[in-house]
Length: 70
Image 1 (cartoon, one colour):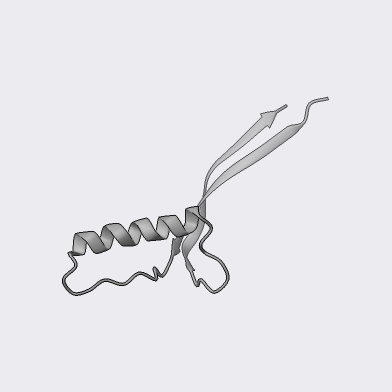
Image 2 (cartoon, one colour):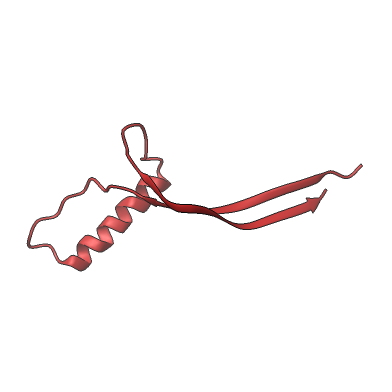
């Protein structure tokens, strides 16, 4: 007997406060790169734990639904 399995991919935009700080002599391009790297690292390494306040921006968007007969 075949089973039907559905999976989905959802895009969610979030705003994460990065705890890093930069001095006045730091180039804007460096601040931008390091802030992005820090935020992505927080997500990838599970660094968004208790006490991290993030905000969901906008509505989640379902990007794809895949249905398979298995």
